[in-house]
Image (tube, rainbow, N blue to C red; front, side):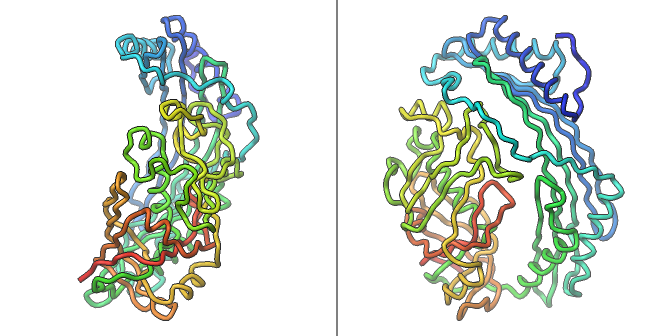
Length: 450
């Protein structure tokens, strides 16, 4: 291990990282490990924020890291470092081996079975460097915030606008012969402003994120949308306690689906800390609900050919016709449950909830009267019972149209019942994250207010 030169963001950079991770695995074998896996990553980026027309922060990001897990039989040890030099690699492996030698045997631990490893690697089009200079980034941030502040006189203050660009290269390898690298990018624009009308003061935001900067909303569009969302919330009031129909806007619906995924995650299942224990093959949602993974969508934020263990990712149904078809499992959790890994070490990949109706406006007309949730607060969810209670803000809907904004309310129910009470799934899907879902309309929830 003699190569100490910095690794650059050129095509040969990935090959250099792969060589270094090979060195890391050889070092693990030389120190007595029976098997090992390791990852290396280098990252760089630029973040600029502006507030009230002036630059607030300029940050250049550069980072590198390595992590190694070694096995002595079925005793496991892990260690990490931010130094990729040969000496640091030896020291990091030595630390992992020291831990493994004193660890307790765990018959479920170890590398994945070789037949589960990814062998095909189509180009997912995830690497789109944005050659963004500091001056250009400043101009974009200022334009974004100015667009928001100039939208209406009731926009009276700002928390600022930000521009971020990130590029990274990651390599993962194990002693089964798997060694693959990936380059990817992620860029974003965001803005948050405050508005005032009489004694009412509100804040809201908007953001755009994409792998390719050409796919971002314009700075002006992001600013204007942040202002419009803030203006709509002015004059908010509470509601009396009631039961009513409730719709989660697309940006809030992802959290509802997130609670479902947490309940079918292997770790929660083998610990018996899930309200969906023993529900495989059972009806969880209405029969029109279809939830599936699409890991190989070009340019998507959750795309991957393999998970954090090198296991192949594949398109699959998790819920079909409302029936739970599969769990979310890593190698370890699958072994604990006596099942096969689903390629979800590290999480799901482009989880997609298929729509059943039109956009939010159409769903509002179908709702007739009820609550449109625009923001959620707090973490009042019991993963064992499914009991759900969170602070919320949004809009009261009458005759299929937004009547007035509401705040200082709590929405409550039980997740099992909430999933069964879904009426419709909107088609204006939010693709700015790993869960791709539109608005979700529920038959009833308890809304507690004044």
